[in-house]
Image 1 (cartoon, rainbow, N blue to C red):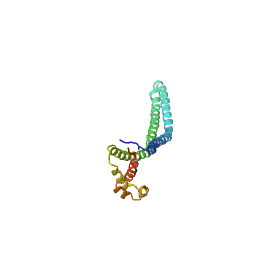
Image 2: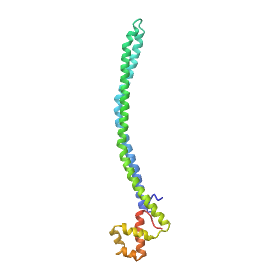
Image 3: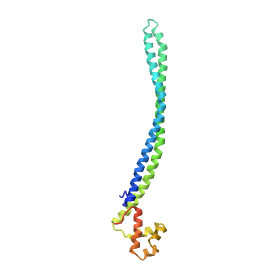
Image 4: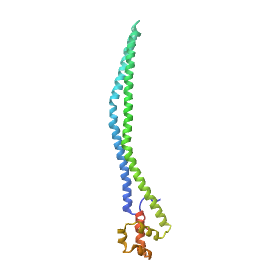
Length: 200
């Protein structure tokens, strides 16, 4: 399997593209983390509410316990404090629920911001790299098995732009049909270079 081109300049471009993709993904991970951080700050009121509710619960529990110590009427005096303690517990629960809702919102917002650009970049990169790997590997395999340069010369005649062919010779197709070794080699080199393979 051929992952990088034989030509140093093209291989360098491919490695640079790979590194740029890693940078792109890391950039969006950082953006996602920043969004998560900003949205998570909205949980502060929930923490305040939870702390206030917990404090009230403890105060009402302490007051209720003291009232319960009053002879004969202690339990009757304690009842309102127990009710207030229950209300404080609901405040505490509301604070916890608010924090959980903000945490979930922060996670969803971070994923929504970070995942799509990163995934699109990865999909674009994978498609380009797989196309190159398939083509270069097939061409490299043919070259190593000693395939005739005529195959690559013919592909170059069909696929290369006319201005490129015109720079090689005045009659590229005619020279190829006549079996001109220089023309066949030049055409084959064009096709091999496009596939990222240097002829041996």
